[in-house]
Image (cartoon, rainbow, N blue to C red; front, top):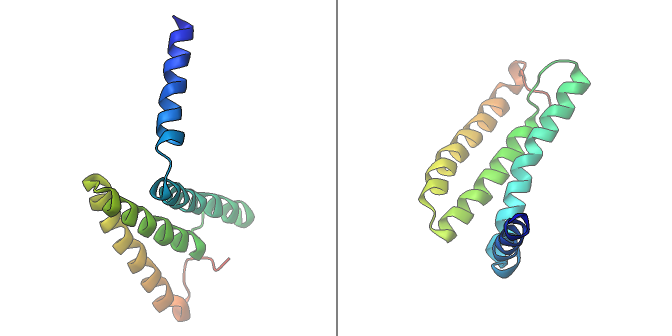
Length: 112
């Protein structure tokens, strides 16, 4: 029984990551890696500062990963991804605009 579950899992993973591998899967994986990198950047910046901070790079990784995920969702015709990332990408761009606008006024965002 355990062997059957292991085989089923192996077949599933092969089907998802190998048999269906194409440009869009690679594109989506890169998008997800960019999106995940934003948390690593935020974590490292917070550790260096000794407090929770959101560096500018966080927003750029958010925008890049979100935009790539949106493109992936459009190409794959995934309405959940399109709706979620469409709004989120607008918010990321707006945050960047607000940070750039307030730089001269003393931004709360680190520039690392």
